[in-house]
Length: 589
Image (cartoon, rainbow, N blue to C red; front, top):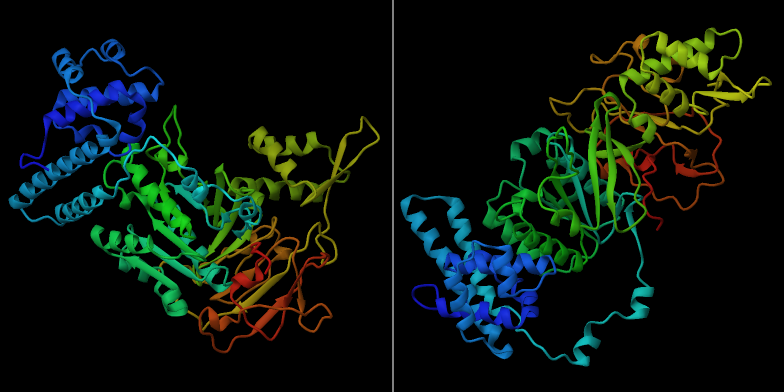
């Protein structure tokens, strides 16, 4: 590396070599970027070469002149007249040019730092020095190949055949893959990820969590009571927050050297780990390469990302470079329906696993998730009103009304015709049923009985008094609606912030609960049976003490329905965290 931190002859020789051997550009482009060349004319020519290569066009003088008229003719002639470098030596010249480029950046950053102290500049200097030290580790280009090298890295049939595909959470989180979750700010990405981390540790599905938080502050963690998870799980729950960029990268570089089998790593959010512009592939790709390294070390990687605000003529599932989607295994968008306290995940990339649209409610009191019926999770207040109006119409009808009569009832009340049709269709065999009439085979509708012995699917509800459990955040309601199946809702009887019963649907299915009492779990198709039953062997339910300390707990169970063959065993004398009662489709051990 020379004292001037550039060498014009090396730049010309490298560009000349690419003209004579265009196939070398594929490897050179992995090391050299446009700004690594010192002279602007050389930057233009190298940029033109990269663009021609991307378009599968010839890299020669004629195409560059035709496609890029701004390229300087004199600079082009000087390059073509330069000495091309042999294949054996070419990579040595490439590394030398890269060192010069990094040295120039270090010099300019040092000059900026002399003008005034700035921690960002110090972080940048440290990253540049690390990059400079890594240049000598670049692999030299080789034209020849040897079978022993190929044999070393080629796939092994038996090894691939025996690979075990495993979900951490069914139809959502696949083990040892990279998953992106993108959403608008304030949707609940962080809360969802914390709850997932907590539940996987509770169920011992994973052994270690590394949560790297670049977005939130320590005060936010306290407000959300996330620090209680540290007390609960100890060193199994590593949470890093409020750190500088250099400190975060020290953690990441340490993780890159570790065996990460059975570990979950969360990046919250990914923008904090990009050194450059999130819209440019060249700045995003190095970060995604790090995520792949962590995955190859055995980790399951989740990174949170932002969505752009929807435009009139354009919507995007995520913000920034296409490299985010290209280099991830699976990707979801996250939306929230406040009317149902629902977080709705919709897959837009599914490379690994059978991913499905899935919904949860977040339980702020103990950082867990309750799985919701997807149709219920998407319901709005307007849809609830249409359901209530339809139920009242069916109750008051002397004869079984036809589809057209149900639809007309809703449209006469001012509701949109298409929305009305959707509500009627979605709740067939849930809240109402139909039979075929003798006349024109028309549908005739009637309500489904809601007694304890008749319902299309099983719902089992557990209530537990948690008056002496973990503290509630000042922003958290004292009574939480934490789960549902189909169209069953829960109301409070005496909480300060409960709704009046007249505003709540299906009041005959609502169990009254006291303040600071919460609904432990609901799931369609799930039976909870006493430990005294004949089917109560092989239980493995974690006690409540593994979640938060409790005192004077009285557990009351109300069996609303029971007609399913799926059994989930519960000792009525046990108290367990909410997640144990909700069938989140954890893998069978």
